[in-house]
Image (cartoon, one colour):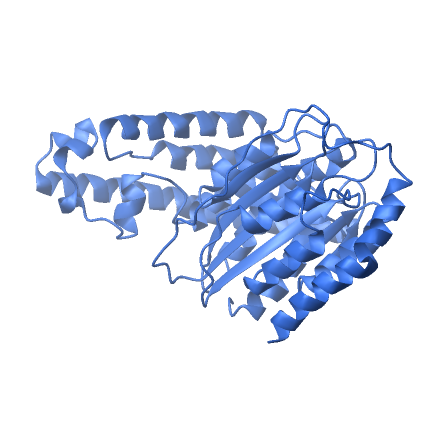
Length: 398
């Protein structure tokens, strides 16, 4: 009943004046754009939820990120720290699963208006998508926050709400919404999110006039938190003497991948995995590569179509897999030999994971000492971590 009243109040409040107030303000601070402007827009379709019969504690979070020209520092900071944020969640006592979705947004007339990556448990896919983000466009202050938030809430492929599932949105930007009438008002979308048991947080970069008020209101209505951080994202990225070795160990984990299933799909998955490993090794910051290595040690649901992972997690039984769906070298073995071979490869992977965790303890101590020297930061990563700590607890995830 409270949420129904909230939704009605939200709509009435919006129509009565809130949107008009911000429309009037933003109209005076930008060059007018028409919605008929020719633009290259990335077409997206609403993703369908794919996770069913899942009872383990799980976090699904979608980052709705402003990628206009002024957001370069934030985007680079997110690339540095997103793995660390995820690892903190996965190392909680209940070992939650983590799935991530992304919405990059700009405005009409830019290279694109929105780009959507639906929620996925393939965190490497989410990260390589983030790595491809570059700041550009914008320039007229307000952006198409309306469309971006609507896609994040309504089109990202969220699972059905259940006990032990936290669904959290982070809206990150530095400018207020455009007043496009063809897009739903941000408060209408926020009310929809709350009805679906989602939480909406807002992170404001910089101090542009007209942004704070609407960002605070979205967070309040979204039952989330509002954060104000530096325009450059305020991320403290600390490199350590252990990063290179951790990245090397992550590569070793990747080399243990064993694809299975229909031959064409098996080969495609192996090829995609190799491309991903090379891309991250060549382009990701060293600190991010080290954090990713830790994720390879704590995440038991990291690869799509990996025989070792699925046998270790007991989601499949080796004896139930058709011979033709196994890798060629395994097909040649007897059933008993297959079991011994897979068990040995799983043991090898576990040893690499143990090495990663042992080295990461030294890295953690080094980072803690450096942060003590630098003092407490107030940036993107600390804001997200603070929100997650409180909101996961609220959802019963410890």
